[in-house]
Image: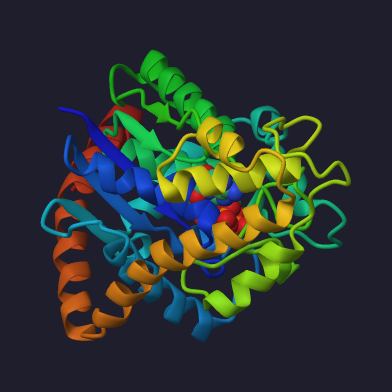
Length: 327
Ligand code: ATP
Ligand code: MG
């Protein structure tokens, strides 16, 4: 059976990019596979976090998974630091990884660019991500397009380990949607939308009020042509809005392009706000109904227990393979 693992960092408020690129897939995949969805707090601390914000956000994200449709009876929803084997396997794999391969990671280059001091964890982060995935013998990893390189690295680390120490890890496949795997920033549509980027106007949070995201969409950067056409290279702004519209409305880009032919960008933007108000409103309502914190704690505790059972087995297998003495 297919086993799926994926995670989201509690490094900011979840955006529609996280939803369309990752979370939407989580919901679909829980029905056809054994799924584990993690709040990867150990990844978030690779950049400075306020402790109270981090605690609050980690729980918020777990709640948002549920509000978006992840069913805790079908999927295992847990917090990464509750399963200590992530850190343990992370170290074991760091000793099987090379600086040469980490130096090639574009996310590290992007996130460290222009910074005077950079935490070591930001550099070794992709190895921890490899550990997250390999711990659960995941066959598929649903992610946005930006994580493709990290999954490739995971595959390389796993294959090399298997070659050196014998069959230990399952080699995972990235599961990246053909469409919507890279939602772009509203203010700069050649860059991906990120929850931790500086400019608030670049992104829309899943829990954002319609009056706030309306302004951002109306201000979203387009071009001076005023012609509605899907052309990511020459018209990245309009193409991004069409992508978001298409995914939220469940209508093809061709249908939308035909509908808005001859109209300016204003109408497209106004209608997009309406579609999003409707779709995000439903998620926001479910989120607000999930106020029972005891219930959430119970789900997280039971899920961590389930995850730990699998994770422990893998770490023991790895230790045996590497020659570490077990008690
Ligand atoms: P950060 O800025 O802290 O890195 P992020 O928005 O990139 O935040 P992550 O927690 O790193 O979010 O990633 C969670 C998931 O969301 C990953 O699967 C990632 O590929 C996906 N994702 C992130 N941004 C986008 C985007 N703009 N479009 C589609 N998918 C995205
Ligand atoms: Mg990211």
